[in-house]
Length: 87
Image 1 (cartoon, helix red, strand yellow):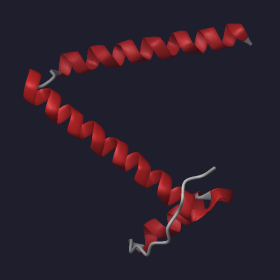
Image 2 (cartoon, one colour; image 1 turned 30 degrees about the vertical axis):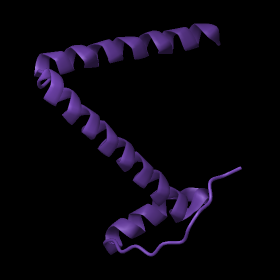
Image 3 (tube, helix red, strand yellow; image 1 turned 180 degrees about the horizontal axis):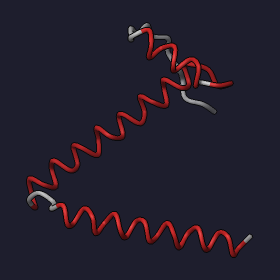
Image 4 (cartoon, one colour; image 1 turned 90 degrees about the vertical axis):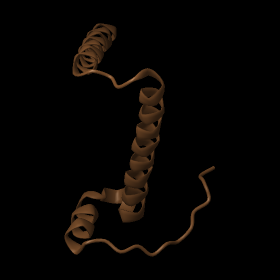
Protein backbone atom coordinates (compact mmCIF):
# COMPACT_ATOMS: atom_id res chain seq x y z
CA UNK A 1 0.00 0.00 0.00
CA UNK A 2 1.39 3.41 -0.91
CA UNK A 3 1.69 6.35 1.42
CA UNK A 4 -1.20 8.81 1.60
CA UNK A 5 -0.71 11.82 -0.64
CA UNK A 6 -1.76 15.45 -0.55
CA UNK A 7 -2.16 18.01 -3.25
CA UNK A 8 0.10 21.08 -3.03
CA UNK A 9 0.66 24.13 -5.12
CA UNK A 10 4.30 25.13 -5.66
CA UNK A 11 6.00 27.86 -7.61
CA UNK A 12 9.26 27.31 -9.48
CA UNK A 13 11.09 28.86 -12.40
CA UNK A 14 9.45 27.93 -15.70
CA UNK A 15 12.65 26.52 -17.23
CA UNK A 16 13.11 24.14 -14.29
CA UNK A 17 9.47 23.06 -14.45
CA UNK A 18 9.72 22.38 -18.18
CA UNK A 19 12.95 20.42 -17.78
CA UNK A 20 11.36 18.36 -15.00
CA UNK A 21 8.28 17.67 -17.12
CA UNK A 22 10.49 16.56 -20.00
CA UNK A 23 12.42 14.15 -17.75
CA UNK A 24 9.58 12.89 -15.59
CA UNK A 25 8.61 10.05 -17.91
CA UNK A 26 5.60 7.82 -17.40
CA UNK A 27 5.50 8.28 -13.62
CA UNK A 28 4.68 11.96 -14.10
CA UNK A 29 5.83 15.28 -12.76
CA UNK A 30 4.44 14.78 -9.25
CA UNK A 31 6.45 11.58 -8.73
CA UNK A 32 9.56 13.23 -10.18
CA UNK A 33 9.26 16.25 -7.87
CA UNK A 34 8.47 14.03 -4.85
CA UNK A 35 11.62 11.96 -5.51
CA UNK A 36 13.71 15.12 -5.83
CA UNK A 37 12.36 16.52 -2.56
CA UNK A 38 12.97 13.17 -0.83
CA UNK A 39 16.61 13.23 -2.00
CA UNK A 40 17.00 16.79 -0.72
CA UNK A 41 15.61 15.81 2.68
CA UNK A 42 18.12 12.93 2.82
CA UNK A 43 20.93 15.37 1.99
CA UNK A 44 19.73 17.82 4.65
CA UNK A 45 19.59 15.02 7.23
CA UNK A 46 23.11 13.88 6.31
CA UNK A 47 24.42 17.45 6.55
CA UNK A 48 22.90 17.71 10.04
CA UNK A 49 24.60 14.46 11.06
CA UNK A 50 27.92 15.70 9.68
CA UNK A 51 27.57 18.96 11.62
CA UNK A 52 26.91 17.07 14.86
CA UNK A 53 29.76 14.62 14.24
CA UNK A 54 32.22 17.41 13.41
CA UNK A 55 31.19 19.33 16.51
CA UNK A 56 31.94 16.26 18.60
CA UNK A 57 35.02 14.89 16.79
CA UNK A 58 36.37 17.81 14.77
CA UNK A 59 36.24 18.35 11.03
CA UNK A 60 37.20 15.58 8.66
CA UNK A 61 40.32 16.28 6.60
CA UNK A 62 40.55 16.20 2.81
CA UNK A 63 42.86 13.20 3.14
CA UNK A 64 40.27 11.31 5.18
CA UNK A 65 37.58 12.12 2.60
CA UNK A 66 39.81 10.87 -0.22
CA UNK A 67 40.66 7.67 1.68
CA UNK A 68 36.95 6.97 2.14
CA UNK A 69 36.28 7.69 -1.54
CA UNK A 70 39.04 5.25 -2.46
CA UNK A 71 37.51 2.58 -0.22
CA UNK A 72 34.09 3.14 -1.78
CA UNK A 73 35.52 2.95 -5.29
CA UNK A 74 37.31 -0.28 -4.44
CA UNK A 75 34.17 -1.80 -2.88
CA UNK A 76 32.13 -0.90 -5.94
CA UNK A 77 34.77 -2.53 -8.13
CA UNK A 78 34.54 -5.72 -6.08
CA UNK A 79 30.73 -5.64 -6.32
CA UNK A 80 30.86 -5.23 -10.10
CA UNK A 81 33.31 -8.13 -10.40
CA UNK A 82 31.22 -10.32 -8.10
CA UNK A 83 28.05 -9.56 -10.05
CA UNK A 84 29.75 -10.35 -13.35
CA UNK A 85 31.06 -13.71 -12.14
CA UNK A 86 27.69 -14.64 -10.62
CA UNK A 87 25.91 -14.09 -13.94
